[in-house]
Length: 107
Length: 489
Image (tube, rainbow over all chains, first blue to last red):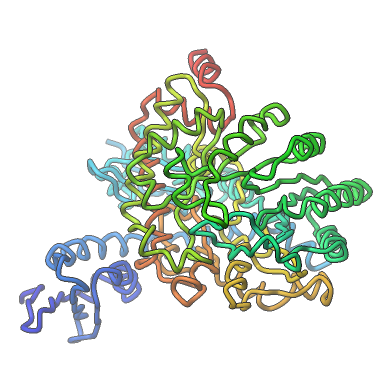
């Protein structure tokens, strides 16, 4: 199965494995590339998202964008995993840091 | 090899740099560079507990061994210290004492008016009510900044406010500091002596050598302001010490080829700081963007070249800081809190800084006033003649704007490694992108800040003693020779 396909209308399709990458990770990665590309995402089958890239101007190298996007997916998934594992610690730090102010509000 | 996979990874963000380096920044803004291989081991829980990497990450609060570790309490205190500016509600009060100006700068963001139109002046009743409103602020330490137009066109009101606010803040046990933002062309000896006697800081504008300065900063009749600014800069030193004088340099297309000449002009005038800022998308600037504007990348290249030259000038023995870099470096290299209304989160709008118009209207920020001067009063939060302090500062617009400016939950900011050093400007987002939340991938504001912070980190990573000494001299306000002696001890 080809993971990257060049479509006839000039778009590139990248197939992203749902069993490896979360939806949040795909969305966070896509957001970063919305400045240079028009991007459409859809679920193409039970195991894959299809991410369609169309460059916003002819100077943009679409292959290079998709390559960078592929690496970005990995970093974003690492971020998602870390966020999940230390979310409660983060909440505890912020809550404790502002605790006296909350206390005053309740008085 | 002893592998310890039982450690807990504390919250942090990361960014990749060249040479396979990864920058890690924790929740309190502490940073560490790791080779990519070590980073992979870290997030994979495969670090050797005796390794320098492990110990370095533990010392800088990126990992801990147990949830009850005092290190987490320490990290909490550091985070709280970084956010201390939030406890000073509201410290900066900007007053548009007049909208009149004797200059008509091409890029004027304040939509200044003709000097003959006296109805654009703040009157004494509005001034008194504005100070009374300022005195309601919970912050015990406040700054009152006189803006315009050209504030010295309404000098009598400035004197009235200084005297009234000094007396009232003394009675209330508050500290007050005054700043006048002036083009200096109207600064007489009498005015300068008064400013000196009352410890007023002076913020002025100098765009560079004569040709660059005059390209955009002219009198209303089109004649040169440069000679008058030079005369005042020569005279001001007799009254006010250099550390109390700062100058803004607004970058236009005419500046881009002359970073060194601009710095040399500042040095020639004995100035000790230069604040490089890009053009603001407000006021008359919108009409002339095509003529004097540039791309974000052009500005970034200009900024980097200028910063490089400022560092060189410092290394040659003349102390001059680039104020924006100095602010960012303080955030990156020290644990201290640095609120800066234009670059903080939550946004400084209303909670750190607020703007009072000549007519008593109160705006969320200086930019909100600029927008109102262009006809859009969306961010006007009340009027000192009509509304109480509670109605103005506790209204839904203030709350909504603040709620929508928490970087931790904004797309593009939430996972940005530079989040702790950067900030949100919802009014600028609204002005440029029709939405206070904004869109980071297409935002020049985001691109410029990100690239400047990244550039500073590239210098920090090189750890060149000469460059780092200059940075520390800016952060501490000490001379380079003093920094060198201390680092050698």
